[in-house]
Length: 392
Image (cartoon, rainbow, N blue to C red):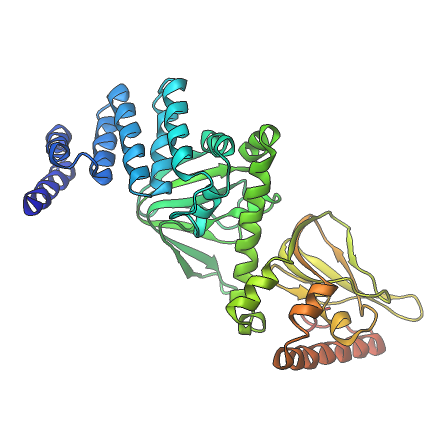
């Protein structure tokens, strides 16, 4: 029987590729008679019915697919099938019934929803789950299509449900380079939910892809009714941003998994306004900062009152560590050049998690002393250092 099902799938795929959609649909429907809980087959039936323009039948098939994916503990696929009901004009009662069934299965779920974006759904209560699903959108892309493009304004977060994509970024030479890949379950673009700003990279689909999209406008709307949704979503992307920092920063990546987990809880996510002063020269340092979005300029004040601008801080740069490391006043004033986003680690947490590690502390101390000496040389000469020469 298993071989027969495999052959049936292969025939259905081939017929669909040849444009024989009705024949492909008949093959998949025949397969369902022997395997009614096969979520993948139910999904194919739903999509074929939609392509054939049979909206009512497609809506019923998407509902069945959503329930089958839920039974298979596939929350992303289940949610995507449920969201499709709105696109097909399914009655509100049908959509509410389906999303309620998914909430029953996945809200506050501890069975199979611990990690990744599935963990986002599992931390929501049932009413919050339904409210979030109601504002999500399903987007489909074909190979070669860009989902987001570097430099364009960002206003939404995406979750890849199925398919593959590449992350590319422009180099100083003008060429583009692939810097990463996006697989099912991966999230990207979450900074757009925190603040307005340009996309930092492009994401281009390499094989047919289905994505869930959450816009900043939709999140604001649903959070007005269900405040818990905003709290859970913010905690989700804050953890992702911190995890990325701990994984990619040469110093912080040396921490053990247990140390990283403890440290991640103490970082907070902050939006900053244009002109906001984050550190003031001569004052005690209050925190360690990571610039996620926007740019900041460090300034040194000469004894005669002249100000000298130092190397501009860009996304990914850290600052504030010198004062904390050496227990000295802040060596330069740091002001935001525009709106942005930072991760902030308070002094007490910095000392607890980082200065308590002998090897890490020694390396941080050497780095901080070197940067402080560079600041002193700038004060003496009035010269502006080249980009990258100084972090506050």
